[in-house]
Length: 200
Figure 1: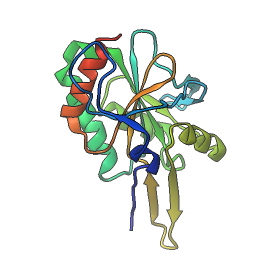
Figure 2: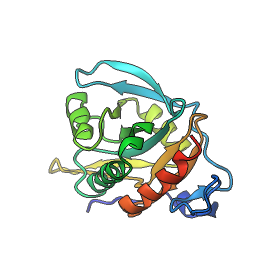
Figure 3: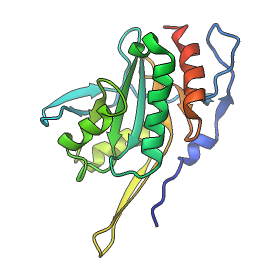
């Protein structure tokens, strides 16, 4: 049976939903007492032709970086999360250009560049498609986010993939400032983006 899970660490060590921005409105996402710092991590970014470049987990100046771990064959969590992001971006209209979306595939064997990039592009403009066949590198990046994934292949050829379902908002210092659990929806994402934009 196909399983997907939230990292256990996502359930602990949070301040709650209070915003540290100038706004009095609360963030719907979760903030840690000791935020994750992921800016020292990097992975190969691929374009549709398979050309790679190095990508660091830091937002560009004046922007936010949204990071998600998933895979293109995901039947539920991934398309739901990405569709929620798309809806949230449409609601914030012109401000959406202040956000870059990166997805790390946890299923690189099947998620080749020519499959991964078009998939992400169906949800967001100018996505960052991250892919590596280096298991150690993938695990190191996942560990920085306190995320995890696993792949099991059955004798029948069926592939079962499990992965952390949280979404991470990273600032220009490489610090995770908000974590969105699966199910926060477009409403929660829109709320938090509007608040976070005030600090950009």
